[in-house]
Image: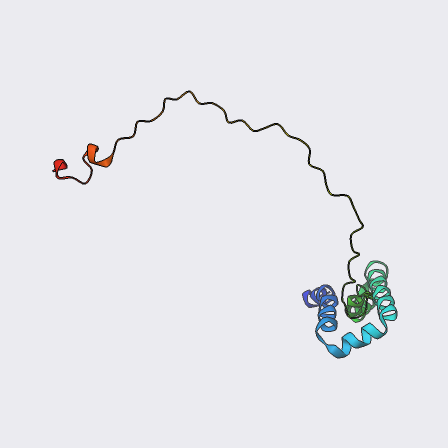
Length: 132
């Protein structure tokens, strides 16, 4: 089998999935017949595996090339809820308010370093003519 054949078998299910996702016509058909489309997809994947593993040769390769795109139909599922909207969440039941546990007061660790002595800027000579 050529490199093109292998690439086709690997890429065509994904291309079919993209076609279903982006084409309104194909998406509508798959949505209308989702059970049949999914069954067709899984049957195609089974036929693909059988043709490559057990049949082999030119016949197996031809079958694999023909059924590979339909494997892209295997992963579509029906979505409940109509229109893709999420159901409204249930309102919370009347739960008692959460209780806070009593905690001991926070204490800062005492430092043993001596306090700083502040000197005003005019005493240090900052910004005065004494520095020149």
